[in-house]
Image (cartoon, rainbow, N blue to C red; front, side, top):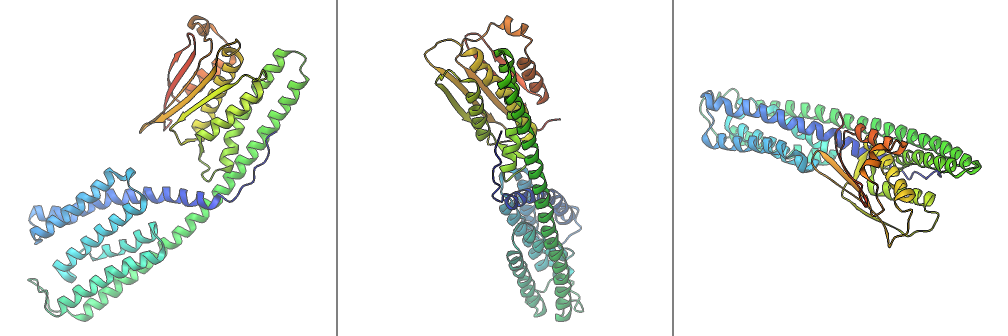
Length: 398
């Protein structure tokens, strides 16, 4: 049976990673809707002739809007904090430009509240406060310039342009920003606690599933030792390894910081060790070659891929390498594209005639075919003088 591995404390890191996934989705939505909103507020009125913005202001606003749309297009290639910082700079630029041009007549003063909102969402509380203080300082400087007549746009109502109005507006904006900041801070804290609890529960589930599967595989292993013929003993051992290939997924998920995916190279190496220990009783020197450029697989992919590789490795050891040859080589490679994974398995065994393979009705072949269908894979098979199977499957299953 498989031993219980100690859990060092991956829950905190996993919570932060899962929290970042949620924040990335929020920031991406903020990007696209913010860009659309900014276009409607800053550019369309100018084009329609309903705004007195200068060409310089229009150019600055247009650059900021293009930056927002550009960030959205390349959002997957930009880190969360870098993306958020760029949005904060853009918001600050909109705020500063329109405040300078329109003073308290600016209809977009409220966007200053997005600075602490975004700062707390992606950075820590202290950094967010400093970002807001910079914006508030800029507000104070521009207010001072207006009150002293250094900036004096046309059609300025003197009753609006006084220190009391600027101070009251600044207080209101600060109160709203504080309320928003406290809400986001509380949301962040609550989100982390919920995700942390979920991760602990998921790890406990994976741990229990792993232990239960280990019990089943242990019973089958005991039964195989009591079998009186080689055929029964071999089939029980194959069934044991199929269960262990599933159990190994849950074991790795239990140990992982991220309970939604497994590290593929580690999984395949440990799975190969289990199968070699079971079927390489003659002491052949099996050369395993791994070239895997797929870092992780989800559990929805990991279990089917694990069982497929279990069947392929078992077939190589039992059938392909059952005669004397210079070397016994198995190659497992894989790579990923934007929307697909592709895994290739090949050995240098004796192979099998295509007609004989098609007529085969073994459980292993049936399992491989059904699991390839389950993960929506397109495969290419070559079995003459060797065994070669390549299968390509989508990252997102329907």
